[in-house]
Length: 358
Image 1 (cartoon, rainbow, N blue to C red):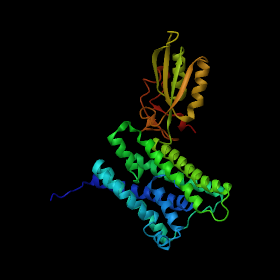
Image 2: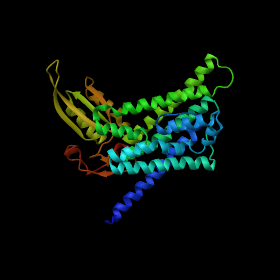
Image 3: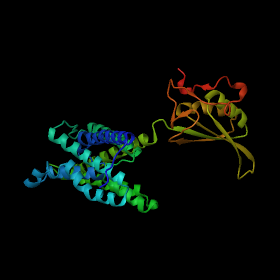
Image 4: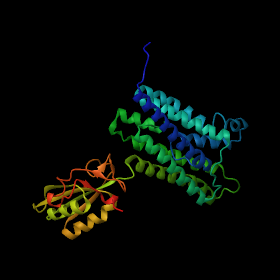
């Protein structure tokens, strides 16, 4: 049997990846155990379904089922059980590295969940207080979103519907796998409402039934929405840039002011209006969000009739930007500005961006 050896770089890579998986799995399990599960939320996925099964087992009239609620039906253990067939499919269909890393993340997540429960760690329980439930939904969704965002950046996964989505996409990229995942998450969130009805004690009037049905569903959707938004922010980068597209007849004046005042590169190209057939110049300039008002002021001062629209760029690299991110306060990058600023305005080759000014 051939012996597998790893050089220092490979060893360092896998150690860093494993450390990252431990941290992110801890954050995800912390979110589920502390905020989500004890309040009956189920923001989708296998983990949410496992939490609902655990809550149903705890309140079951059957003594045997109640006894199993802290063993077989424990959220951590049941998450592993439900992920087993999905992980087998992942190893058969998907990339082995992704499948192996997902298996490690699932085991870490489930093991930490079980450990929290066994040790008796405190939980954030709202006890029907809608204000506290809102805090729990937002906090739980935010923590889970941070974990998911960094996992996606490293092509990691906590298992469950992520594996299903990967498999669907690998077979048919046009199948809109994300819509199927979202649909599954919504179904799990709705199930939480019916579980809420089953916990009603006393009168079963219409108001009580409606409140018990909608409360866990709505808070589950709030947690899911928060999780999705935070995940998108982390995955695309918190320091996203803006792309200005300006159609003007005074491109020289605008480009000059943008390069001099903001120290940003400017691209000018020709365009023709379809209706009028008139030729215009199009300016494209990428800036930070902090500079948006200054760009608007410059354009308005130079050409009040200019047509301008702004789009968001998740990641930018190149002159004036560092490694796909904007320069931070106090950070200076040495770049060649000879092709951005005319030579008569060029004092030296070190340019300090707008963000670095005190």
